[in-house]
Image (cartoon, rainbow, N blue to C red):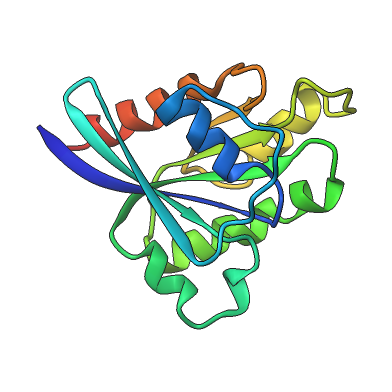
Length: 163
């Protein structure tokens, strides 16, 4: 059994905690609870135990933030399909992750796909082209569960194949 760490990164309120709850507990709550600092969950899939770090959305400016990223084998960068500024921030999140863990695989979760949004296939390709380490760009919904397992399984597959 292999144990490793992944970190979910993204702006405040994009649904990082909700994606983790959907993946780990198969649950969703409409109630919003902001993560303060870091929260760690774990889930075993295939032959690996994933330690999932959920980092608060406003930590980019705190010196300790980079410490949260150290030792990660991969990242899920989460953006909110309904808030363009969170999609625009993806590039900065990629740079931040790679400054700490060079060449780690990244999945992009464009969350809240259950709501009407304007992002099309062209936009998805533009996001994927931001870094060669992006292995997947997926529209997800923590509420409905759409593509949530997929993004974690794809990242797990990439990480475990590199061992």
